[in-house]
Amino acid sequence: MTQFAFPTRSYEFTPYVDALNWIGGQWLPSETGRKEPIFNPRHAKEMGSVVYSDARDVEKAYQSAAAASAAWRAMPTRERAQILFKVKQLMERDFEELSWLLSHENGKCIGQARGSVAKGIECLEFGASMENMADGGQLDVSRGVNCRVIHEPIGVVAGIVPFNFPTMVPLWMIPQALVAGNAFILKPSEKVPYGAMRLAEIFKEAGLPDGILNIVNGAKDVVEAIVDHPKIPAIAFVGSTPVAKLLYGRGAALGKKMLCLGGAKNHLVIVPDADRELTAANVVASFTGCAGQRCMAASVLLAVGDVDHIMNDIISQAAAIRPGVDMGAVVSPESKERIEHYINDAEKRGAKIVVDGRGATVEGQPGWWVGPTIIDHATADMPAAHEEIFGPVITVVRVKTLDEALAIENANPFGNAACIYTTSGGVAEYAINRFEAGMCGVNVGVPVPREPFAFGGWNDSKFGHGDMTGMDGYRFWTRPRKVTTKWALQTDTTWMG
Image 1 (cartoon, rainbow, N blue to C red):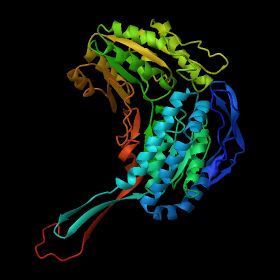
Image 2 (image 1 turned 60 degrees about the horizontal axis):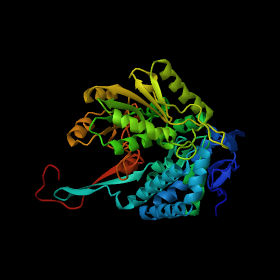
Image 3 (image 1 turned 90 degrees about the vertical axis):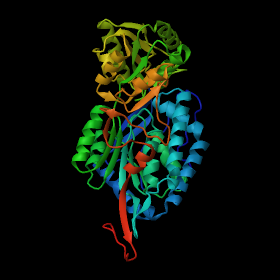
Image 4 (image 1 turned 180 degrees about the vertical axis):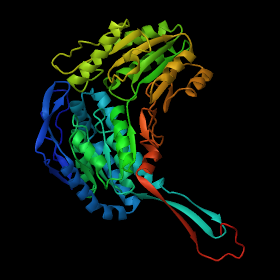
């Protein structure tokens, strides 16, 4: 059944196929006829090409989805969920293939690629479980009067996803949207369309009717066409804060449900009583994992008081990280240039580069490499300390007190994640209750909530209401119908009866 199985199980460069649009269960070229290359970041070589579409392709996808929607909506929730369970089984069957494909198109090392696919499967599993959790509830509110809630699908909905997790982030959205009875249009990142391409094949093999999941590839033209489409009522987005804010305002002005997750500048706070071994390993994993290209990566380290013993361990462990083995490449030459610009700028402003990832190379893999970088003795007003870098770089700001650290974290416009490293429950609670962030950790530098808990930040890290995953995700893709019924005349009526 699989048309485009990825054959390689190593980092060896492998040419692949061209990524087309998936509309009505068929691979189709774009109306524009335009294609752009897809690069393997490890090798800086072209794997294939991806079509760049426009509003005509979005309309095709919408018409395909609309035509299939009535029968899908009429299917019982339990039957829709069974298809998702089958998708889970097929993803587990193809786990190694999906992981190596992700590594090749995104640049991740294979261990982190496997983790990304595994997390996607977990999201899918939660979506499939919604058949047992989606009861809206009912109650006899007065004598002879019953109220109940029905969560209904809202039609043809859409998701726009970033380059850093080609398989996982689409599965933050698609399972809940589909199990609720919607049809879905996905716009993958043009840098990494292959993960979505393989998901489309897997969903079809699992029995998903043609037209219920569609993929339209491209860039700005497709995004704008999706947001402006008059009959797409709900759109989710994950990407940078400027784009998230722009799309939220554009869609909300048209009366659409919009949930747009933006960027981050996550702060880790270390106090002197922190566990030395746990803290050092956890901090390094947080800022180097996925080459720092994740919105949950540590970005600023607020070192409170005398924590040099822990800092020395962080520095030595970060210096031991091997690009190409322990950490992957960054996604593009533009990303590499931007990341190194922040390092250079901090150095010019007086900060000390105590671990320097500039000029990192991997033998036989001439791709876009930036090694782990620690910028120490920075000040909070340096761009590296308050702007999103999105690379394997952590900026250390030294402070005297926990309140000083909290003031720096609170002043940042983002509000995605924050963490404190301490062995004191009182200190942990003090910080957690004062962080200006939607996802907080205690001795956990990547505090991603696991299902059924939902993913989402605050402030300039999120625009819209609710969160992306968990029950909030299901509610986003539905609308509640409230039904009040009365079947018998009551002789002892109240004002409600």
